[in-house]
Amino acid sequence: MINKFFFAVLLLGFIFLFGCKNEEVLPKPRALLRLEYDKPSLKTANTSHFTFDYNAISKLSVKNSNAIVLKYPEMKASVFISYRKVTDDIAKLTLDAQKLSYEHAAKADGIRPRAYEDSINRVYGAFFEVSGNAASQAQFYVTDSLNHFVTGALYFETKPNYDSIFPAARYLQQDMGRIMETLRWKN
Picture 1 (tube, rainbow, N blue to C red):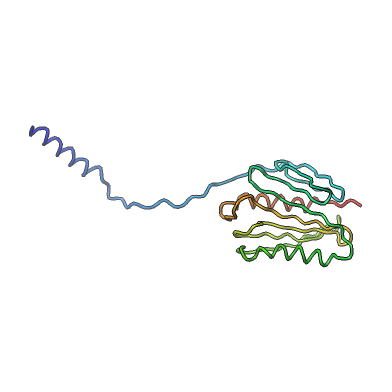
Picture 2: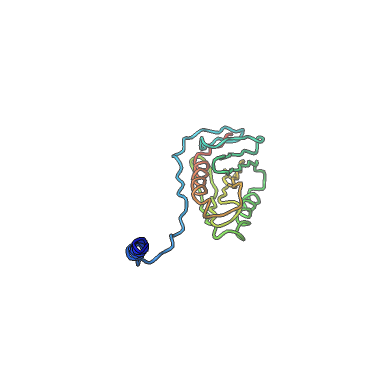
């Protein structure tokens, strides 16, 4: 009996002596999922009024001759593209497009506008990159200043959480930039 007791005390002593290290316990830092997307392969969309290149991972849906939706099912996102014929209201169309972008300012941490100009193909406009928990993470408009006016807006099918959607938002902002750069008017 004493041998078992002596052995148990000896075993517990070794466990306490060598089992417990005097290292400081530190909490692990929060980690975020790293999302990377493939380089896009491109398709060309051909509408009644213009053409543009878009990412092949999106599903193109033509609502009517003036409305197109590019759905990104894996990212649960959509880019809505609208066309308007310019009559005498180019200033109003431009102001409305800019106002729509800045309506997200209440929830956004920042909105960074960038002018766009392609004088060779007569495509002029602006791209609005939105950061923060806004409903739309990017918007753009382009026009030829005479006949055509196109707007585009990115929306996610989830409650906005900028930290979570940032990689997808950045990727889709590049896709939207490509739409602007490859857009060509039809006469």
